[in-house]
Length: 207
Image 1 (tube, one colour):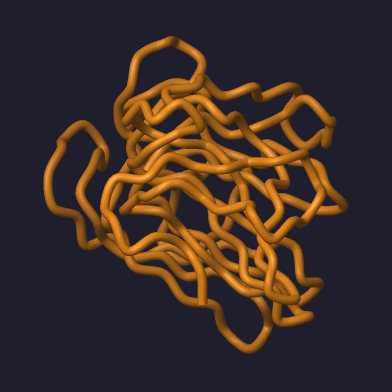
Image 2 (cartoon, helix red, strand yellow; image 1 turned 180 degrees about the vertical axis):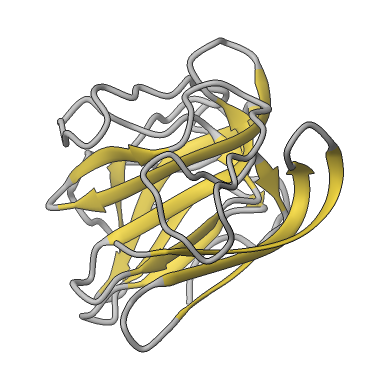
């Protein structure tokens, strides 16, 4: 349907928000993807190649609709820090840092959500992440978690939701959504409560 038959290709970004036949994300792996309520395909980040052919972690957001790609958010250059803004407040300049092995999903309203992975926060250093983001109406919102790397989880009481609860930083986790649009998250590799390793904790997030 598109793309190159040759490995390690750089991205062709075109103009932000403008679909074009020649646009194409660079080669990558460990990206996160989802489909929205209109059936459009979305792709975020991963480890791969930017507009200059440099390899690293990406934070570009792409949409594939009607046979064409459009670059929707993020940078054309690898290894970007996150721009968090104020928690819970959407802003045009907000964007998650470059990362791979995150998880993503859509809620019942069709908004895009992104959690964790390994990549860049605000420190210029890369590591495991536990930040939660929402993309809605063309803007990112930092919803929960830390803007620092390698943070432990805050578990609270089992079965009891609380504003301060947050899974520890991790990658390689599994996720699904239930019939009510709640996110479920289990396991991965990362930080629990003072230890790091393979995880078996199960979390639910109510948007």
